[in-house]
Length: 82
Image (cartoon, rainbow, N blue to C red; front, top):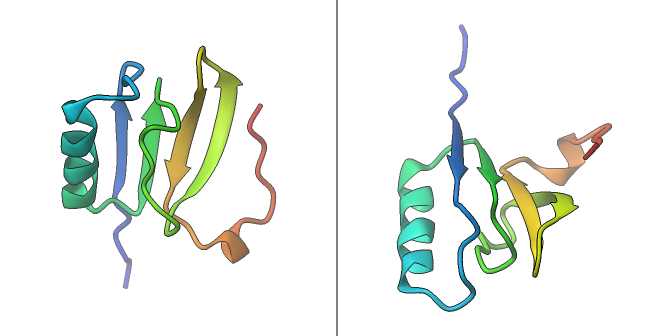
């Protein structure tokens, strides 16, 4: 039997460090409950906690863009951030 895998992507358009919108973003991401989250144009002010692993891409001023992936770190064999 096949298992389903839920993948969600969201361009956060560079969230500001101090914003009420950040709490709403985090709430929505938890509500979606995806197995894999791909967040573009984000930065370190969107912190999903220790249950997610971040693979940052190139630096966007003033912080880094990140893709947060919900996987067990022991399952990652070879990851390239390009």
